Length: 457
Image (cartoon, rainbow, N blue to C red; front, side, top):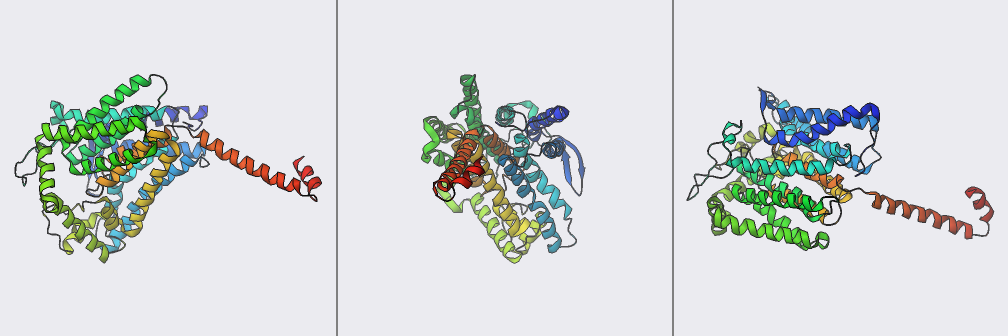
C-alpha cells in the first residue's frame, strides 16, 4: 500500500492519527455517552474520536499535500459528498419550517453518516500496514459485538434493550441485539464484518497467510451466526445479492465462491433449524409475501415518503420527516421517524440534490475499491457494497451510527489494502509508448528530421 510519506516533524501526529483510526470502530460498538444537549443530541466517546480523526486527517493532508494521489482524491470525494447532505438538509428544514431546529439536522447527519466517511481518506494517509490492522480490528469488533449477546456484561451497556421482540408475530420470539440496540443493526454489522473477514480468506496476504486465513474463517463463522441470530430479513436479502454477485463474477475465484456457498447454506439451513425467531420471521415472509405486516409497514412508509417528497422536492430536513409524513397520510404502525429506505431518507430529508450527493458518494466508494483491491478481494469488497445497497432499500442503514463506520471501513480497506504500482506502471508505459510513437512519426517525415533531432537533444 503506498502510504503517504511522513516527515520526522509529523511522526507524533502520524502515530496519534493511526491509533485514533484503529479505536474508532470499538468505540462505535461499545459507545459511552459523555453528555446530552437538546440541539445536538447525545454526545458519545465515538463522536469525540471521529472529531479527532477529522482533525488529524486534515492536518496530515494539509502538510503532505497528496491531492495528486488518486486515492487521496477519491477519499476526499467520499467524505465531501457524504457530508454534503447535512447542510442541504439544514437548508431544506429552514425552507420547510423556519421555526424548526435546523442545526439538529447537521449533527444528526454527521453522527449517522458524515463523521464515519473520513475513514477511507484517513486510512490512505496512514502508514503502510494499517489496512491489515484495520481489517482485524473491524472483524474482531464485529465478532465481539455478536458474542456480547451471550455475556452478562451486556446488561451494563448504555444501549441495552431488555426486550427485542415483535409482539405482532404469531409466535413472539426475542431477537439478538449483541452490543447494539437494534437487531437489524447487528445483522448489518455481522454481514459487513463477514465481507471484511473474507479478505484474508480469499486473498494472498504474504507471511503467516495460513494463520490469517484461519483467523478470517473463525471470524466469518461468527459473523454468519450473528446474521442468523439477528433474524434480519433485510440483512439476508443483502446476503443473497452479495452471494449472487460473487458467484457470477469471473474474477471471484474458487475460494470466494466456495466461501459464499458454504456461508449462505449455513445461514439458511442452520438458522432455520436452530434459531426459532429466524424460522418464524423467514417463514412468515415466505408464506405471506407483501401482506406480511412488517413488509407492508415498510411499503406504506416508503409510499408516504415519496408523496411527501413530491410536495417538497428540496426536502424537508431530517428533523421534519415525521411532520411531513403525517401531513401526507402516515397510517402505519411503524415509527414515523423512519422512512425505511436509505434512498428515500436522503431524498426526503435533504432533497434531490442530497440524494444525488449520496449516490455520488457510493459511486466513489465503488471506484476506490476498484483502484485499490485486485482479484477475488475486489469482488468480495464490491459484494459488500452491494449488500449494503440492498438492505438499504428496507432501512436507513448504512446511514446509521452503528453501521456506517463498518461500511466505510470496508471501503477503506478495499481501497488501500493492495498497492497500485502495476496500474500506474502500465499507464506510464502507455504514455511513454505514445510519446515515442509520436516522435517516430515526426522523425519519419522528411522535412522534420533535423528539427526533431535538435528538439530531442
